[in-house]
Length: 266
Image (tube, rainbow, N blue to C red):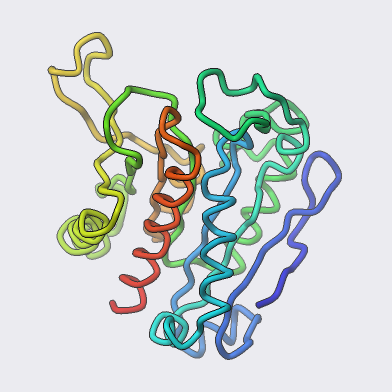
């Protein structure tokens, strides 16, 4: 593994990128020449939503500590993790930044050091954070990107919901692969584990969810929408804020792990 400084953020501190590569190859050109898939996990874009931060630490420790168990995954992938994207918001902690969220006690702030929402800044690129992340994305050209969040929307019994790339934005072969093969497989894997997953609840009528739910349209101003402009399949995990923090961390961890396994196998 290697921890790199990969640009600067608006609070003046660096953005880090943590790489796991079995062959210890940390050059993106050689990674591509060796036909390895790249999975990028972005954490803490909203710093009060740290499920993916802890989930990624847990996953990295497990993979690096038990490489034999994860041999097949490591043979086919390079794993790239942004530990915390919103560094400034993470440093600005309070007990009161996420009303009613069930842990952790201290939470980072949604906005960054310029008080801007980083998950609305792609394309316009007003922040140094976003410009640094775009450089990472263009340098490593990930096949899959996962953006981890905590949802403060509708209440439901499931710990984790998922927003997948809007398939009509993708190249047709990728769109078909996502909708017909990858998504059914990921939902199946999650159902067989401790945390069943459902689609993100985005109601047609916010006053009456019985009117049905619709797919979330992740325009390119969002991280997940931006990467699809470059033929990258993206996922946004939304762990539910009313559930215990430990469960939210583990549900996010299981999704990332299942995505790594699927990508390595396919």
